[in-house]
Length: 190
Image: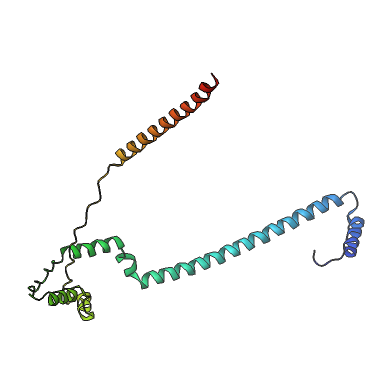
């Protein structure tokens, strides 16, 4: 409170009591309180306006930085469409010409030589061949088709029905067994 001690406040109060008088002192204190509250409100309004101006200035700076980033990289906003990129890649891979497999050498009469050539055919291609395929200089080798057995086609509804039927049979057997066990003690007693 303006760096005043209690003693100084008491002296000011005593002077105000003598100068203003006891009759008008409450009215004077009320007026002083209202004036100090007005001054505090004005100071708070000024501080709020100052803080708002600072925030707006900071927002303007951020907007300018964001705009400069958007202007420096315009291609990022217009050309980035991962779904379209995937579609294009799939379309080009589907429309690419299919490479025909090379004709296999004729089998030799010697079984050991035939086995050796079969093992050579199974071995992985050389690094240069793989590099040529990756760079697009050579067509990709055709994948050998392997006939896989189809999984058995089982209708889930029939499986569930069969399971429920087996469960009902089991419960019926349990009930019959429980009935037989309950009848046996009665037979012994009678």
